Picture 1 (spheres, rainbow, N blue to C red):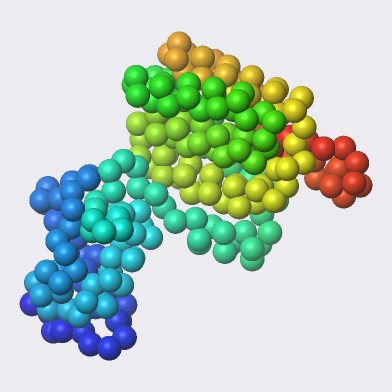
Picture 2: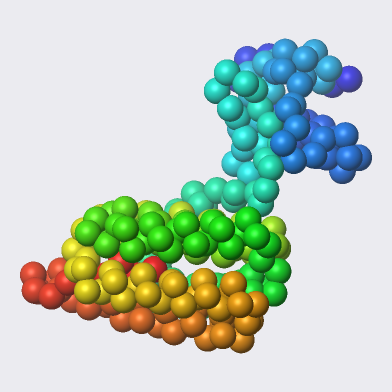
Length: 248
């Protein structure tokens, strides 16, 4: 066993925790939803201090591999891993991602995801998408709530693609998008929100009808319209004039 790490955890010592947990997963000893051994047991088994074990678990949480639950312990993530958006957010702050760049990436990723969802979505996926469409219509008078349901709809499509890499990438992009949009969403107007809700309904119907081509077409049209809405909104903000819808 490794020598015990004392004081401030080092990256190398914390990496032992990551390697150990990865080994358990690769051997099939841990799977989604399973609870990890308590910190003290991991520390004793690996010959590490508890602060070092905690550092390793934080690294695993950042990677989306584990999820801490207050009072219950740390569990292997059940579902698509949630990749942290912090590196992408840092790059956005450093390089200043533009609106057009964001939508270009979204079209590359989400148009294909919609097609996969139409081919692969199961009953529980369709139920979640239907719930989010209903919530979009119900929140037309509340732009901030609309934005949250909008993002949840797109995340649900990522899950419905049944490709964990696609789902994880969509989670990461959605988190960055929300950070960029939440401060301006309040300038949305009901007319544009209603149109956005209708476009989401058509995407859902194409997925429900198992029509990949229509799902891709509807998603592409939606993202192009959303990009135009956001451009109008930004112009209105600069000129203190017209308003537009959140760009999802």
